[in-house]
Length: 237
Image (tube, rainbow, N blue to C red; front, side, top):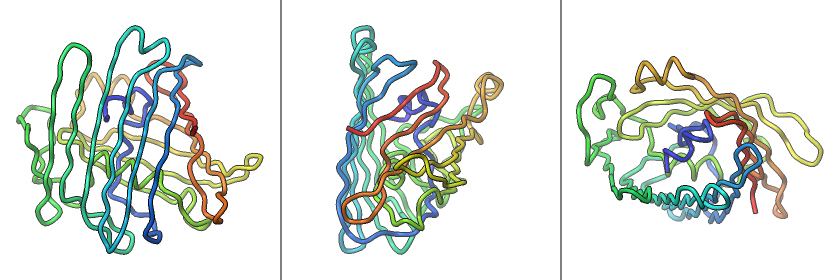
């Protein structure tokens, strides 16, 4: 999952989540992904909140012309507690199938501190014990793509830990764009990346577009970003 969003330049949408909470409910979204105008795959996100708890899942799968070259599939799930504006993950699981190899990883949390199933110390790897208050990639995606109130649009300043790396996403400057509201966004690599990665690109600007729903809330309809492979677009189906 996080590898795919790295292609988009978002790197799994980091969050410690600072946006206001919404009422209990469900999220069910499917996004078509294109890179330089070429269909690359789909991203599906489902989530539910009830009684102060949340659960979320996602599937990223290559498709179109890209799918003919490389069949890639990532699945992820997360669950935990939500209180006010704060998400507290309890568990995160991820499975990857690159067509050449399969792998899995998980994180559990105690007192807000993640523990990584496949953690291997290294010169660039961020220690889980230093990442109190961060959230996992799936929690980040669910938090970012669920419906919000009008006063919540474009208000996000969050961090995420994926088991190795720490990064940040900010949204700001809401303004009208036709029938939608557009935000300026920036993804920034913070720690755990190789010197080569940081030299290649440390920040990725993007724009996120909200549209009003029938119940008066706003939901993400489109994301446009600069990836390492050219301009990328996620469009809600």
